[in-house]
Image (cartoon, rainbow, N blue to C red; front, side):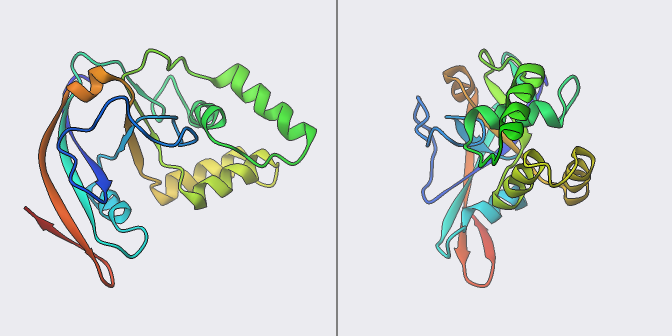
Length: 188
């Protein structure tokens, strides 16, 4: 990815210059980072998650000198994304076999992301996260799970992991979203 991309970050505040190191809970999908999306509509959805007004901050990210790993594109695959989630999130694995599947996935599908500046992958909201747990608890197949992600257009998140990535970010504007029956964008 050697281009400039527009990304959006949802927040309860305007964030012109995100602070580094990024302060997030350690058990987010990809660990600590600055979580964004390239999908404006998804950002609007995230801006008003709990019946409160919120902001969508719009940025331009210059990726030319960044190491960007896209977990949704070859050589990675859905299992690569799972492996990253397994390292970062807590799962309810109900048996020894599930734990062995976790170890197998981590051993065989973990991409090297320790030097990544930016990570791109599917979002793992509660619905998708529950489906992933069902997969690891052997209640649905990988093929069934993959068809859900392909059919539902799960949405992608873009996570800035490094100071170099943060320094490649330019604030463009913010949009305020008022929670009523739905989010309404008012660009400032």
